[in-house]
Image 1 (cartoon, rainbow, N blue to C red):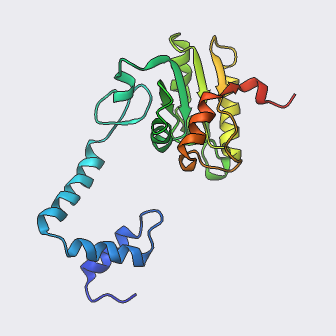
Image 2 (cartoon, rainbow, N blue to C red):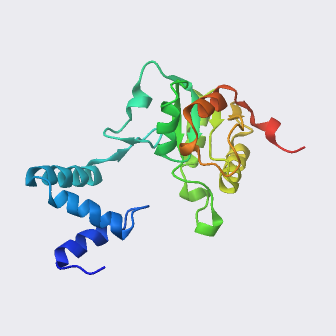
Image 3 (spheres, one colour):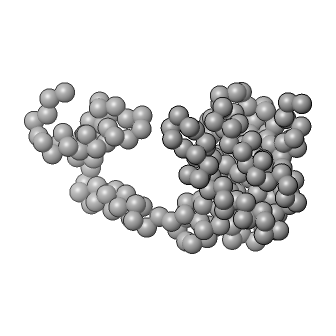
Length: 205
């Protein structure tokens, strides 16, 4: 792809770094911005800069937030004794879209993946154990994607929590193995949470 402008090429290079964006799509996005009013492009640029510099992670559940504690954790209508454990914020959004869950969350920030050099200490597992040990939590729902990494992470968390006074459940497997939670349709995901089962019953005897 030949460019008549180094500035154009540089902008295309940056957009092409985004996941799922090839160079042709990147070029189309850049040319679109060039055709928009300067004020609109400045707003776009400012929103990205503000996002990167101002975003926080909830000190309780590690969800993305504008404040020290996110809106879900501070909502009075939420059941704080029920905690849904998810991989990342996209899963929080997916579950929230079902309108069938009224508990709170704990965002791990990934899953255990030795191939990628990600171990338990790289995830927000220690803070989960601390939350459970505090005594307010009565049930944790293990809601990770049905993948080998997800199942490995679930089993590790189960081993960390099984001797604590908390019920450990897992979402029903209406989700095909290998399926990413964020891509599951809302009805299936909602039913999987509503029909969750004790995690021990899912283990092979």
